[in-house]
Length: 336
Image 1 (tube, rainbow, N blue to C red):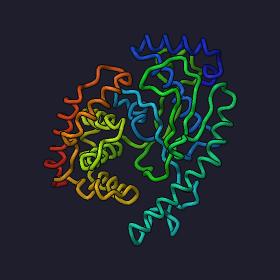
Image 2: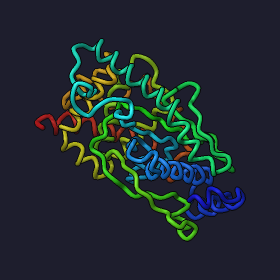
Image 3: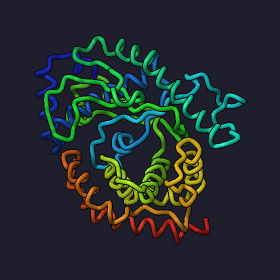
Image 4: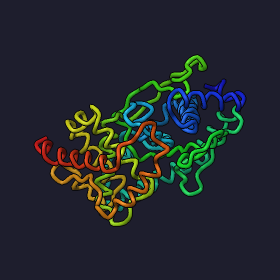
């Protein structure tokens, strides 16, 4: 990958265009996927960075597990909170019980502040040192979100929904378990394996069963949100629908202990009174959005059009599938 990244821009452009033609994809997606993978390889193989983070979220569902047919352009990463001065056990373990929600809130704020300082003072420098040999690659902290690092790359193609930068969304307030090692490769390497000397590399990713319940509790939260659903949230409905169409559905539904773990983590580290995580249990779980939110979701879902590799299901089909999943969670699993 490094040879291609460091090579002439015209060669990369030709590779991405031909790969897109072979794979039936938008060239801008193939291009950005290459840089997503190049960055992931740095994060999970370079001695200065490996073993510090775990890969999670929508991009892992696509790149690691092949469970969704959309391009997820952001990299969600769990930062090892030991880098921030915390322990895995003992008095300095963030999992230790706090005496009140106020104390927990202060602890969460302190952890986030330490993470911001680590990203600003340490990680950005490490990234740019590793990126320096490749012209046109630079990492900068996002102006609006100090937990996010934008990695700009020399883009040759454009598509409206695809930003010309890879967003690394990094935070310590997420669980590392269950997770496991997986081999991944860029789409261009799938199309032209001979162009890559070492196309495959290993990443540590959160297991898809946990992501199933993470996505489900996001939808449960949104079903109770008093205001408008945030932009780009239609992807969560699509992702859970696709997960529910895979073997992950039965694996996740048979593991209500994992659901309980996800809910307890969110109640502790992402407490919100209106989210009603206390109701995120069989018998009262909600996945379907209020009717008032449907126009917003429909508009947001249409805006995602360029991100799909294959003809996507309609939003109506997604919501019907999720309604059936909601019913299954609330009936068949109450005894679990």
